[in-house]
Length: 208
Image (tube, rainbow, N blue to C red; front, side, top):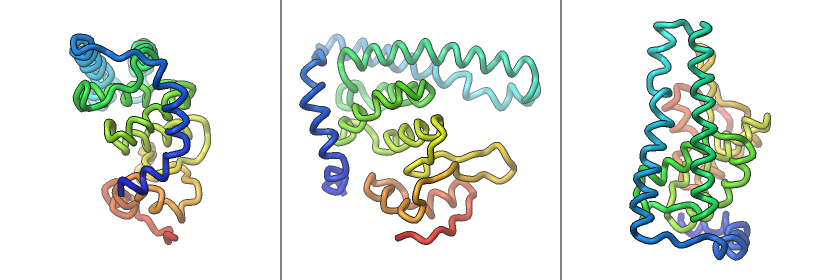
């Protein structure tokens, strides 16, 4: 599985490494401790409002002025956190799990997941290189790419993005869905049939 993943990403990641790795600073042990603490705090800030929005909707009303303001606050904070995280990546590269731990590593992805399309496009290849080194999670790369595509009105590649706006959840548009299982397998992701079942979606597209 790791070999297949390597083949899948080799060309772009090899080019990326040769062009960009040398430009990053190597953080000291003390800097890594500090970056770990900063990113873990960033993750908490990124998640706090998102953990309570359903309760807020129940109290304030989903389409109320108050909820509109709620999401304005979230969006403003997202931009601040995005600027903070991208500044770290620009200086040190994508910090891996062995450097800062799983939570702080996840924070980099989590903030970009809620960030701009431009940031997703810029940093997805850097995350990809980290995945190749087994320093980041493949599912984070898949979700970042899919969110980037959906945000720019293009069909997703890995089927990670689900629309819950209606009573029945559905996948956002998927490019060549007959090859979806193959693409997910290359990343080591759960089969599309199993994932769809988890989401309460009936999957009927025959895979090639």
